[in-house]
Image (cartoon, rainbow, N blue to C red; front, top):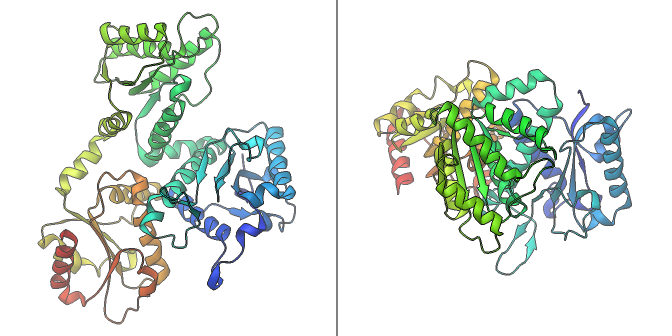
Length: 480
């Protein structure tokens, strides 16, 4: 389907009032950051409009928007106009027959479930406010590039961007879907449906896998009839190279026509594939909750069977550990050969030298100086398909130890964009801290220091002919 607008932002006017000092309002800032993030993920610039901008279009119709993002606050829920816009969008997408994940809710401020519009209560929310866990105080971010914002605001923005990206891909044509696979060249994973007690944990793992570029199945609600369910589960498991099963206290729903739960059946079908193809082609990770106090007798029997039955264990690694430990094991299991090789090649010492095509020849002295100091240099690529270049950039963001942005013939806006990329790096699956960030500039190339004062970015000004000494000093600073 083709839409005039990719993302329509619904909000209350009071939530976009200008901040002190005349800075752009909260909603305007949100739109700008979401646009930056989606551009990175999609590979092209999305069309995002605020509702006020949308109303100025020649013939605004809400079914011309692919996705709506509702920015929830007390002012939003008190606004009859906001609620009417939300309801109109829901009716428009219901009439189109394409309703899957097309509405997202973002919290500008906390709201209880009962305060939220009924249409939105079951949706996953993205909290974009700052919460002091000790005092319980809630406040807006004054500095979007602080360490606190990097851990909270930007991580939620990464989640939101990837979830919107997934919906946009589903709504676009088949060619676009095939391009998504080319971005990551990753495994397909069967993440088994769980009992009700683990649905939240399953969703967290699902979103993390999707954010790292994996194709996660099942991608539809499983049927309630045993024969239909078996067809879909077997088909999806056939497409996967790994299945993940989370088993807690709840036995799970039993589909019509079956005597076993959906959780039990999925494990059975996965075990049968393991027996058929072997662990080198298909493997399983089974997590059993360490706390099973409320488990029924049937659930206890199911778990005992998994632990003792050799058929049920076929091709499986069974772990009964804290969930966070299991998630770390999943990350290790999914670290593909390319990533492992990248990490081995860097030897734990790599510098991502971020620069523009126009400065490619000028940075050669910097590359030489970094390599002489014993570091591997990661550089952007400029030739090839856009999606492949984007994937190379994401790989570098995952693997670098420290980063140096070279400001030569580019302007401050380009530099700020690259600093923003570094802030977002944890959202692309980094497994280690960033040792340091710097902007390297030559004498006379003006850099607005105020733009980076709160972002832990070092500014280095040095002649390229004398770069070895400056680079050596900077790397020593990073190591310290």
